[in-house]
Image 1 (cartoon, rainbow, N blue to C red):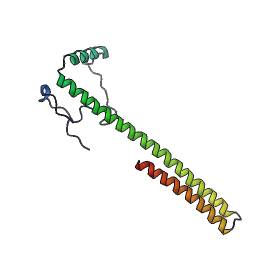
Image 2: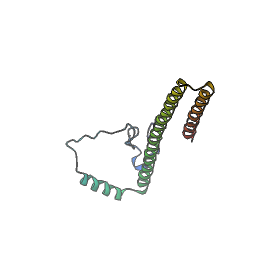
Image 3: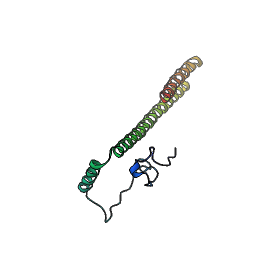
Image 4: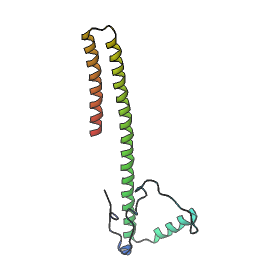
Length: 144
């Protein structure tokens, strides 16, 4: 979804400031590039500045920052969970593919031997059932 600004109205103190879309998150485009320039300050100095500004911030601004922080954490968790789900799905897909390949290989080997037609049907049916069961489990995991 396309976001056109902050999810919450800015505190009154900052209502006239125009901020870029998604200013509140570093996760919008993946990795953000840092550039070191002439105006760079040390991490220690930056930490002191942020700490002093936080101490002097009004209650409305602090609440706003805390809510934005919670929103950012939720977005991070959503993306992390999504990434884990995709990884698990890929592992399951690989496992199902291996089951299908092994079943096909074993079925072909047994069909090429001297088994009678009834035994060939049983072997094919057995592996088809195993594959369908595995496939159904995968689909139920996706839905849940």
